[in-house]
Image 1 (cartoon, rainbow, N blue to C red):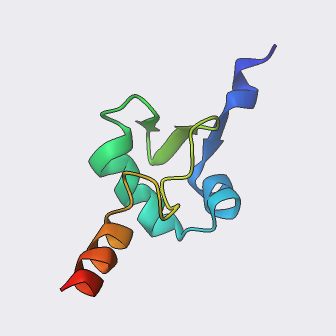
Image 2 (image 1 turned 60 degrees about the vertical axis):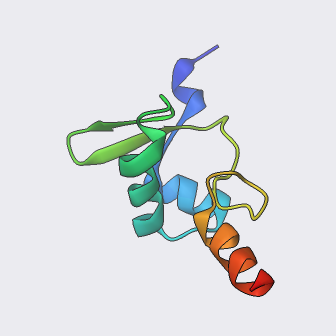
Length: 74
C-alpha cells in the first residue's frame, strides 16, 4: 500500500470537489491544516484524499451554506 496514493494537491482537489483552487487554499490555510488534513510544502498544499468534501452544503465547514440558510430564515 503506497502512502502517496492517499494525498492530492489543490488542483486535484478542485476537480474532485468542484471547488475553486483559491477557495481550497483558503480552507487549507484557515482550517484544514489545524485539523491535520493539509500541510504546506514550499508553495504547494498537500491534502488528505480520504477526507470529505468541505464544500458540500451539509458539511459543517461550509460557512457559505450556513450564511445562506441564516439569510433565508430572517
